[in-house]
Length: 221
Image 1 (cartoon, rainbow, N blue to C red):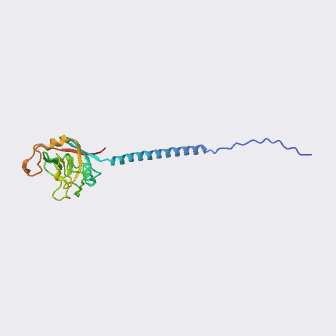
Image 2 (cartoon, rainbow, N blue to C red):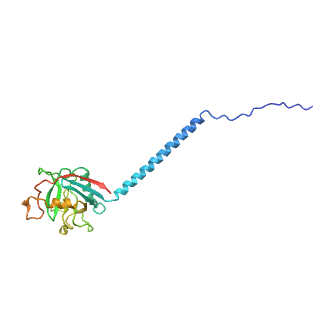
Image 3 (tube, rainbow, N blue to C red):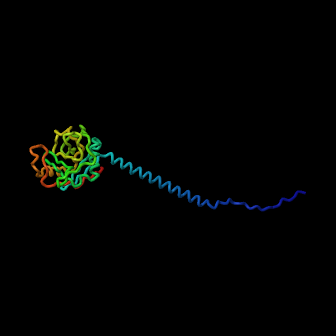
């Protein structure tokens, strides 16, 4: 006689989740959020860096603030990079703040970047720069160029802005920009009454009333 099978009630066991599973999911979630934040910050940084590069591809503008008004000059950094870089460094250092236009001549130019109102002078901390000539930039009306001595490679901080076209200066002085706003201020400064002691020698003289450079700031378009 066959033995009867025992009717054994077996309970189906359900898989038991580890106690730390919730903690694991929480950690994974936090890591994912951190990764998203890092990636987002990275792309934001790349975007800003790209914008900065775009700005640096544009020629900078020098804002020359004087007690006669404001002169805006586009600097030809793409054509005359070394001369522009020297001027930009000096401007960013605040070198020109408080100096005067010490030499003016109507229908010729206005020159500054060297002398204080009391007659004392200021020397550039960067020394001299080599003459940088480019045939694509000439001494047209409103052009800004570097002053120098008889030595072609002696320019430091002095600059002048042409009041009228001055072709006789081409290839002898380094043009590095052009006035885009404020030519009325240039004209106003140029025709001021000045010391006649240098006349009839070319170059004019010091204005009888101080024409002060309050500041020169560099901006990008």
